[in-house]
Length: 612
Image 1 (cartoon, helix red, strand yellow):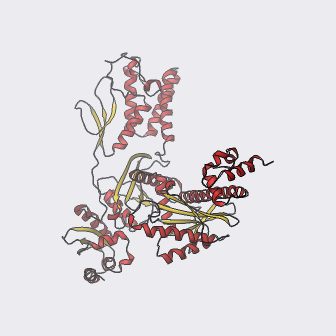
Image 2: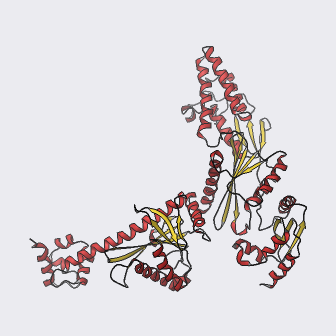
Image 3: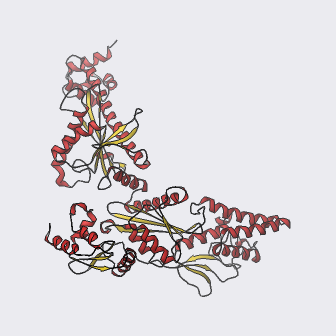
């Protein structure tokens, strides 16, 4: 054991078995990580024990630790609160760090004869009225856009009544998104009523707004004012359509926050969806460097998130259980002043919201890496399913094809970041034996492939034989895997190796390795990816086999001509491509082929033109 680790472990073993906070420091005395523990001695000593038990991220942090300090607390809960406070003060490198850089937004109502409503980031007009401030610009903009559409308020730069009848109405009027104030046909009273209803909509409960509009609609209908009754009806329908079209409106109508995490080897994205009275009022995404996030991401994030003057809701939904979840729930209850419920939904509306939040996290992470969310999600889930150390961004797959042991070939395809990389596809003619032996064929192909790797591995290639794959998938079962693993072990090649198993209908059923079969039907994105890989490698290898088999058949037909052997047959097909072209060739054309003299050219011509 390293001398420094030995000293640190000895110091850790002298700690008490009581709750507290530990503070890791580097050689310069700078705090690089802060954590809390139920039993300080057990927790801290783990860092300086067997290094084989730690993740890569923890090892990186431990390598930089030169000393540590600690603070005792009366309970684990007190340790949690103190940890959050110290992290906020010291901003350690290996902790989740949030910056409260959210600005404030306002709803602006201009002070002019025909008032307008807009979303702004600052008060830029002393004569205007403002509603706010709000912490979520997303919420403000979305709400103002909805209000303007529902109540058909103008969103142009025209000023009324100055610009009455100065030009034709814009597109919004023609698609029924603006009442057309510019036509001069809308009275001041009618316009003010629409603005007031819009402000009530922005300030109040939607159900109350609908109820009030229905009262007005019925009153107009009773007075036979069907034109205005129709306008109220249209507003009610617009509000109801807005609610039904959006997933952002929940069935229960309560306040809740939803959290989900997406990660790859380099980045972590935590997505947050915030609901107020059943409506989505904010959406946020936070990115972190995966190399610096040591452990317990969700716990540390939630404590800091609600430590930035954010209101704690009645419910907090998270995508997975995590260490200290009950303590975090207790802390949020204390901050809120009344009960906060933290759950991991397993069904119903809660599960749908968590899944939507997770999709948002994967989508944002995908945009950051230039991929789609589906590709990232499938590779991350494949990593989890197979127990890999990292997501397999570069996958090679192999299949054998032949006809009754003749024309043995193999195909190799590559999927990079979940997509086929066709320029990296390769084909192999089986050379070491004649006859049918799929295991022997697969052994030969992988040995040849990794012999090429050993020759080119120092080139740091991005693709091709000089690139070490993250995962190998064979089109076959346990026998194929065992046959190839023997070759890889002998060559010292360490790469995850699995087989793709088909059912009786030749559809992908499972993945197999040394430990038996792994079902993939329950994981939709993995099932789709593996099925696509298996179908593509089969198509590619069979296509190459058919091409070779067809060419071999053509060569055999040519070798029936006296004086034409395999080599001359290959030369003829190389030039003319098909038997049909050879039939249509003249003697002079045939003589242009290497090795074909006038006598042979005449024999070929006579053979095909005197067949009958």
